[in-house]
Length: 91
Image (tube, rainbow, N blue to C red; front, side, top):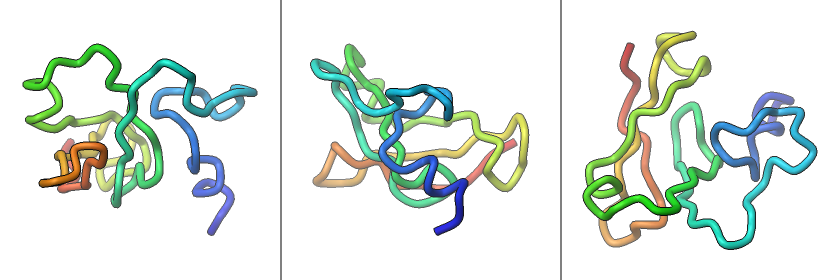
């Protein structure tokens, strides 16, 4: 695992890499991002309605196929709504 991958593990999507406490916080609800450029990150879905999580998400990332400004798409895993699987990148 390279240094960039190491920095991403156990972190919450959207937290700065130099945050001294980038991990999950008590009382928040998270899904795990599986595969793709954000593999292993947690996404805070606290307060999201079911229809917001049922359709998946497109998350900004510089690590995907399209570089800066691109998005990685993740969809809820059938039978395991606590995991979102990578389905591709988009500009």
